[in-house]
Image (cartoon, rainbow, N blue to C red; front, side, top):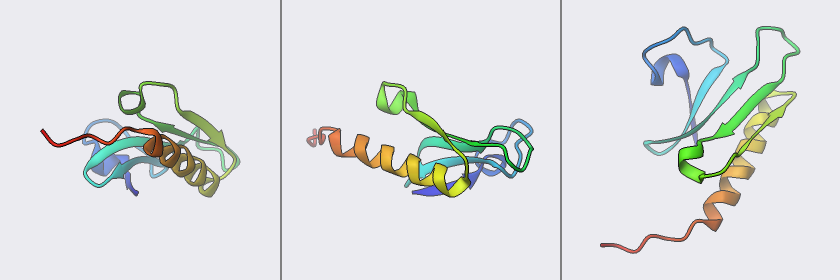
Amino acid sequence: MILRRADVSRKSGPWSEADLDAFDGDREVGCIYRLDDRPDSPWFWGISFQLTNHKSYGHAPTFDGAKAEFKAEYLTWEAQEPTQSPP
């Protein structure tokens, strides 16, 4: 899992340093960002609905907590995905 600042992966929009996109290889799989500029503001994490076909998000009081929750949810989803057989 790789995190990239949104201003690097998304060229449009005013992104802060606390807006991050999550990638699994070249595939964008979700995002993590701070809800506002306050130092005690919680972090939002979300896995792409287009990927999972269900709501998969949450909030954490710290950046490390958001990363851990995102990773746990993503790995749970990934383990449940049926493997695709080659064409």
